[in-house]
Length: 149
Length: 195
Image 1 (cartoon, rainbow over the protein chains, first blue to last red):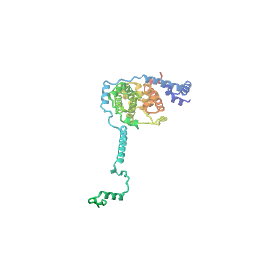
Image 2 (cartoon, rainbow over the protein chains, first blue to last red; image 1 turned 135 degrees about the vertical axis):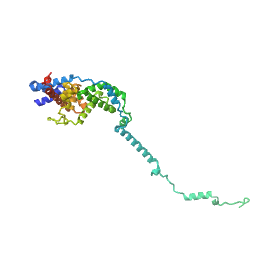
Image 3 (cartoon, rainbow over the protein chains, first blue to last red; image 1 turned 90 degrees about the vertical axis):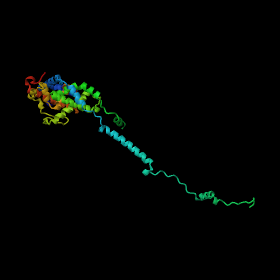
Image 4 (cartoon, each protein chain N blue to C red; image 1 turned 180 degrees about the vertical axis):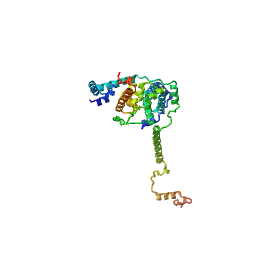
């Protein structure tokens, strides 16, 4: 491992983020290279200093100002793109089903009802029936007078 | 389809009480990160407010499998980086490679890190804080999350929405930037920074 490669890995080594093989290789290089070892010691010390650095506390009234700023904003209650499209899909589906039902039921929409089977007209029989029902068309009968013809 | 529709019919998560409780529990930690990122209480407070306002607006997207503080750190770092970019600072390409994700990174120190300006303002007299401010915002965020918050690289990558390789690069280059700054500006205290 050369110095350029070693120095690029020093921070990860300090943070224990190197693989076992890389860690071993770097350790061996640091044992042999004074310049890289000094870089390692410097960055390790810096990490410790930053880690122990204490941040200053917020100014008085910080919590109240924060609360006022955040809750002056209304939460998202209006529909947005994420929730609109499932509703749109559902509406479209229901509408499509409704239209399909209408098309199947309504003749005015151009669908003719199935025609009934029509029997051929029996004209002769109809004519006989007419004669039977028509008193003037009744078969002649012999009128008997005093029982004799 | 059914899971999508069932999610659509669930009410929006607008639970002020729950958010308020989470905000109260996390605000100290979030402020501590903000003050280290900005270097002064006024900017830190503005940053924290903006982060929580965004978090409240999008609380319905919060996935409870992620700790709320980690989610806030992500929002805060995004706001901080966005604010810095909007200030139109000079971007310089690194002489080295630009990081594993190809993004260029700030190499010129933050002007608020100027020792004279900061000391005159009375906002900050901590050399270490100045050293943090000497880094770019991306480097500073990565270093603070690693060294102050003690996060693993994988966690930092999650918060900063980037790869572990980029996190590794930012931490290493950030520390080296800070070390060079301290050795140059405070040689009597940080000459050849050693334990």
